[in-house]
Length: 85
Image (cartoon, rainbow, N blue to C red; front, side, top):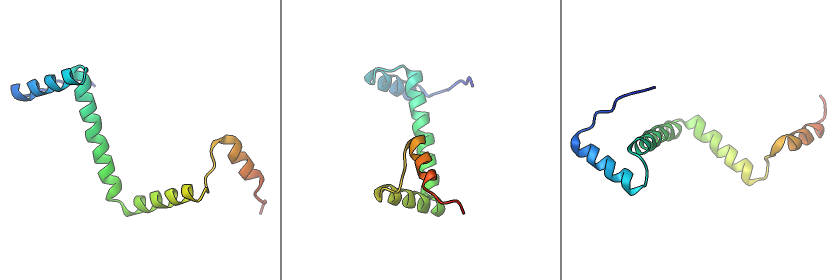
């Protein structure tokens, strides 16, 4: 999506200075800022959802307990070890 961004002269100067300091273009700097903003919103949404927080805590506990398998071979081995009911 193409868009035009209109900035005040002061904000544009600050953006160009930050881009120069980071050895990036102003375009790259704006993209990074937008990505950071969207990631922060997503994090806030996760933190506001008790079910999601509970699921993350359970997943973290499973990893700490070693109750996690990695890769297709590990999953196949796990499935082979289950009894058919």
